[in-house]
Structure formats: C-alpha cells, structure tokens
Image (tube, rainbow, N blue to C red; front, side, top):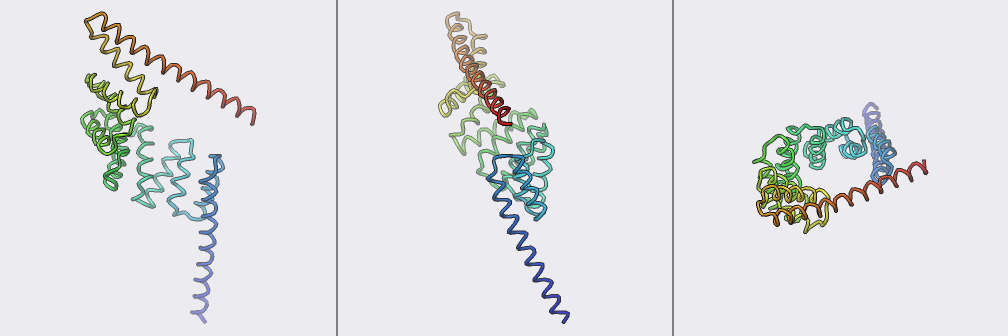
Length: 247
C-alpha cells in the first residue's frame, strides 16, 4: 500500500511538473514575440516563477530591463544556472563595459573566447574593454584578431582606426576608417574619426595648399555627420510625438 501511495505521489509530481513546464514554454514563446518590453518582462517573470532554473528566461528578461543593475542580476542568474551560456556571458560583458566594470568585462570575454575561440565579436568587445583600461597593446591584438576572423566587420575597423589615431598612426587610422566606410558608407562615428585624422594632418602640414585640402576633407565628413545627427534628432522627436498622441 505504501509503495502504491509513493508511486501515485511521484506520478502526481511528474504531472504537475509537466503542466508547469508546458505553461512556462507557452509563456516564454509569447514573451520572445512580444514587442512591448514591459509586457515581455511580466511574462518572463511568470516563466521564472514556474521554472526558477530556466536560464533563458533570466537571459531574455535581462534584455527587457531598463535598469542596468537589474539586468546584470538577471545575467548573473542565467550564468549561475548555466556557466557555459555564451550569449549571456557575451551580453553581460558588454553591459559591464557600460557600467565601467572593464576588468569584469574582460573576464567575461575571456570565458567566451575560451568556449568559442573563433568568435570575432568577443575579441573586438574585449579589445574595447582593454582599451578602456589603457591596455592599448592588448586592445590592438584583439582588434587584429577580430579582423583576421571576419574582415567584413566594419565596426572593428572603426575601433582599430581610432586606436591608431590615439597612437598617432594617422596613415594606418585612415586606412582602417576608409575600409570601414567601404563596408558601411557614411557611418557617423567613422566620419567623425576620419575628420579628426584629416584635421591632425592639417595641423602638421607645412604646405598651405595641402593644409587647405585636408581641412576641406575634414569639413566634408563633419557636414555629413551633422546632417545625419539632424535627421536622427528629427526622427526621435517624431517618435516621441507619436507616442504622446497614442498614450
């Protein structure tokens, strides 16, 4: 009789767990397809309540958090549950850069690279964190490795180009920035950095005609960037107006 009761109890527990898992899966599917971040966060919280060891639920809920510290706690939990969760480690590393925890970011990207040594994104992100800690040599090595792995990542050329500018390798910086603009034309950050290179060349130029040419190139890049910034500001204002009308 006791064995029958035990078996019935275990069966009931399995049925309850299966029901929770099914409900959690349904809510999770709704959450990842929900455009409203507040609603998505609520759904994911319900998933976590049903399945507290669901690493993906913590990971996706971190994406919805507007508060960086709260998002960090969710990434921490996702990685605690699954220490090999590459996406969570990668995103937490980027968040740590935003929070100025560059040493912590480097540690996360070290772990990502150990798990996925051919991941170009992890190298460029680790390079950014290293540059923020003034490890320029380490940053350059990471940018170089990222470009070796994926020569089409325009943003890596921006970061390496900017670092070369800081190191006063203006020719090398321009080569990288021009390559970036070949891949993604008129990108504002690239134009801004290239304009700085042109102005630096103008400062060091002895020939007046050449100096005028460098300044003209700088002004052309700055003009395109200003036009882009103006369009982006206008678009943001239109979105805010629409949101106010709809609310």
